[in-house]
Length: 204
Image (cartoon, rainbow, N blue to C red; front, side):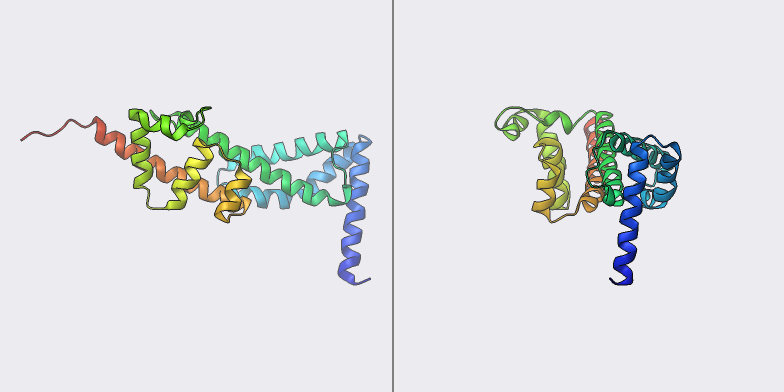
């Protein structure tokens, strides 16, 4: 066995041993879990958000949920503890961005989230309303076709993230960044459009 393989095997055994202690309600093992994986989880969260408060909340949630799952026996492969924590942190980041997006969109007069419809053709209903025309106008003004597609599919068509990632050739982490930027660009265009609509027409 090579040195690298031996190191990996030792790490896997150590992770499995730690999981076993947590399942036995060993308080020191829970503290050790946080100490051992603190740096890796923090790096993942900080790579996706510059909001220190959000990072701290997500950090706490990651280990809280991880401990709950480990105690219930949901971690079926204890030797893969590191991968489990990384995946959990990334999933929480995705959900965080989705909630933030919903709150930001809800603060304006026009909500992309409201455009979703249970009817077979939401776009047809969308185009029938004045608000729908405004949305289409704003989306059409966006210079990036990818921005238009990701906003419409995620918020209006409510397509699954995995499907959008596959079609647009995005990784899960890249999807978060692209969605965030597209949302901010849409928000700027929307505010500009709203200002134009509220300005009195000039006569002369």
